Length: 316
Image (tube, rainbow, N blue to C red; front, side):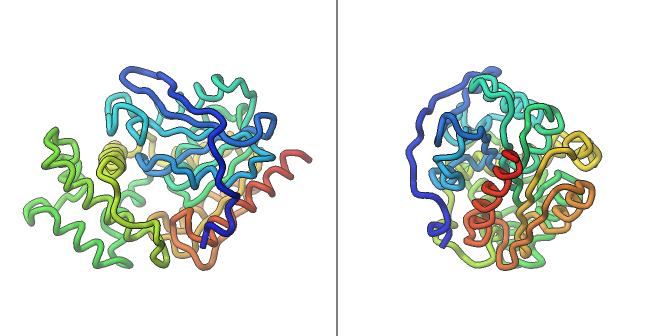
């Protein structure tokens, strides 16, 4: 179990809310050693939020970690709000948090959508980054979006069938647009069932073997996950085609460790390999017995190890 490879449970040293552009207030918490190496944790989704388990990837004696919930997510308010919610807005929020903490540079740690955001932030503010630990790489390409909506069914046909058949037959010709229409409907009787169907599909495809922590989403979390993912997908994650690959040169001088599950169906390994191929100094570690979730034992073990290795690189 991943619980055996993570650091012991730890309380947040500080927590609070940061007001950014109206109407958003972002929940944040800080853990670890205030004199340690600064780290920012970027959660996935978009819309999945943070949990107590995420604190445990980091040695609390060595790292000073900021975790926050992105716009519209978790304890940030308003929940599932799409106004002012773009990749560029989130990049600006990360920089606001850095300024709030008063740190010059920090490690950027992100998985899945968090890897997308980590790359976008790093390429915008390379001078503020010490290095990167990235997991389950997602670059926001049309091919990746199409894979999420249609390709995952090649491996999880039962989950894909439930996902498709939630919609009336007449709406199945365009899953993304018709889910998005339902997810943005103001009526909870319309958007909540659609959110639960979307979240269940993603959850079913996220691990190589079932985990106890992977199951039915809380309605609020399901709504933020599904609505925000659909919003970002419809808008091609607010990035130009190929942008994150094309701009790797801006961060190529910085150390990076990429952790990738061999059998990651949500973010297939070819994307991580493509990123590593244009980032010569990045280390790509393939976990042979894992899918997508950070909570799978092999992934969790590799993330903890990656932070220790990156610390050594930074300090030498």
